[in-house]
Amino acid sequence: MANIKRGISLYSWHQEFYLRQLSLEECIAKASELDIRGIETLGEQMFPGYPHLSDQFYEQWNEWMKNYNTVPTCHDLFLETKKYKSRLLSEDEMIASVKTDIQHAARLCCQLIRVIVITPPSIMERCVEFAEKHNVKLLLEIHAPWTFSTEWIVQHLEVMDRVKSPNLGLVPDMGIFVKKFPRIISERALRDGARERFVNYMVDIYNNREDTTNLPEKIESIGGNGRELTLARLIQRFIFEDPHKLVEYMPYIKHIHGKFYEMTPDNRELSVPYHEIISALYEGGYDGWISAEYEGQRHIQDVYEVDGVEQVRRYWVMLQDLIDKISEEQNHV
Amino acid sequence: MFDRYLICEDGFQNVAKGDEIIGFRLNVRITYYRGVSLSAIEGFDVTVDGKSFPREHNLFSVRGRTYTFVELQEEGKERWELGEVAQLTVPLPGGLKPGPHIIEVLELLRISYLPALSEGLDKKTLILAG
Image (cartoon, rainbow over all chains, first blue to last red):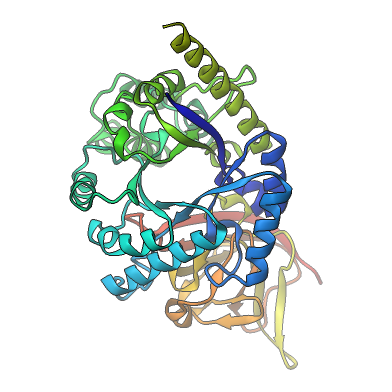
């Protein structure tokens, strides 16, 4: 029996934080008001000074969790392999960096870490014991344009199969299931100077699942301008994986990023088929959080007021409806 | 992604050293969705009324400390945080004339998971007080 818990990644509200419209505490309070209990954070986004945070910070954090009746779910790890221009980080430096993230997650009292996809499989393997000791799971993010079957991910899965630690796993981002190209992105391209016939042509290619491997070259060859080329390159970073893959990979999945681009006033997401996703999660018996992850702000901020709080509210109205419907159907079977 | 917030509306001024005006200063914010190590900043190209001031000569200051282009690349401890206002100082003997100026800033960041540099670009008309 599936058990889906209501979460948010505070990534959803990074623009409000950036513009000092919401503080970290206000973000937590807003989530709580929306009856969202699980809080996922990016240390490098909303915790100035990360990773050198004071004891007082962690005390304050735990106090907020208690006061707002929320729980920390996941910390998002970034690995700066290209931190220095002249050289890549050594393996030992990467391990030290991941261990710092593990200690931070433990101090936040959260048990999950989103590991950025570029992290080498060998680093996961070499950090898992430390993670076990701190009761933290290292979850590799499956993020477009990568998907479960990408060679790099397959290498990670091989390590997971061999190590067999409950502290390794995956966090798929629902942005791998973009069925229809988000209209807020094509509309932005039009506002930025892309011509309608080029935009429609490219969106059709995406929506019809045609190959986008040489799309920028193709657009260039038919006289596309700079904005049209930018859109062509952006489209290449979008993918539509079959949501049923979630069932197949369920043994590895320990957390979910609920990516979405636009929630309409009647609570629909136009590009990601959440009914198929929730069905798959029920079929696979998913037991865990979905962290709402709003990513529309950057595409609309030029002409619209960004309201991430309202977007996340609508998202959870949609998901709750789907969850209620599907669990009811299952009870009747 | 935060290109439009890169150049701040306030803080545009000439900079003096002793009696001499040695350049001008702008307030800027990051165009990315999280803070970065200063070593990941690949610099800022500034253009004023069509005249370019390339990244190699511009100084970056955050929380009261100033870094040259070369010093930034080596600073792996200090960070530029999300939404935090920093200052760009552009050397220009005599500074700029009072009045409106068309300012362009290109911000370059090295983000480990991206194949190319992250570019933020903003253009604003700012008024230098007389």
